[in-house]
Amino acid sequence: MESPTHMYLYGAGGHAKVVAGILTSRGVRVAGVFDDNPPNAKLRIMEVRDGVQLLGGAFPKLDAPMIITIGHNGRRAELAALIDASFGTAIHPSAIIASGVPIGGGSMILHGSVLQAGSRVGRHVLINTAASIDHDNLLGDFVHVSPNATLCGHVEVGEGTHIGAGAVVIPQVKIGRWSTIGAGAVVLRDVPDYATVVGNPARVINIQEPQATETASAM
Image (cartoon, rainbow, N blue to C red; front, side, top):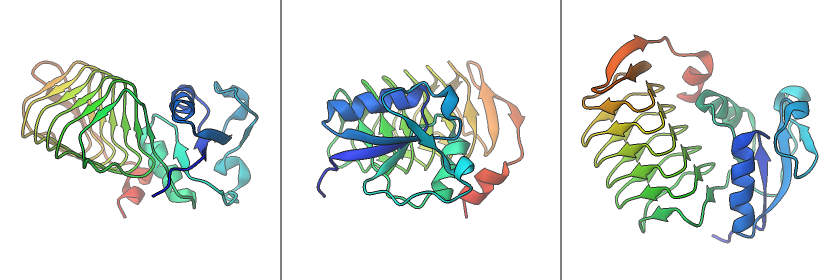
């Protein structure tokens, strides 16, 4: 498939600034930026257009792919369900990705990340700065792996889960959907859906009912 010459961003915050830089480094022009709170936009490379909430759902048809550059997993899921668009990817040149690793549309692979052989990355996934994804990992849609987190071999991460900065997940662990792994946690055993775990070794401190947007994304 031919690489796009230009792309659109949804979200004008800090992640948008990073993704805009990645696209520029790849020779891809940012053709437009949308946001639901334009006055607070941090990305100032061009005028920020109104987002889908401000437009009342009448989102324009685009002539190129889009990336939802928002760190909050639930919000990315909500917007992906609302917007009729194709979704591209942003992969920083310094990322190391093994041959044959599939990366779903809308995903962002940031500076210094490593994805080893046999891993699979879903749609709208954010793999943040210097995260390490070892062999045969499975990352579901809308996952966020924070900076310097390490997932060892054969780890499965369910849809919408957030892995905190510097967290470590040992091999063969399965992490449920829409869970939160605290920063610096060391995960030694499976984690249920909607759980929050913290500490070394990581322990469950809360299990929360699913939010409406998270339930909708699974349909």
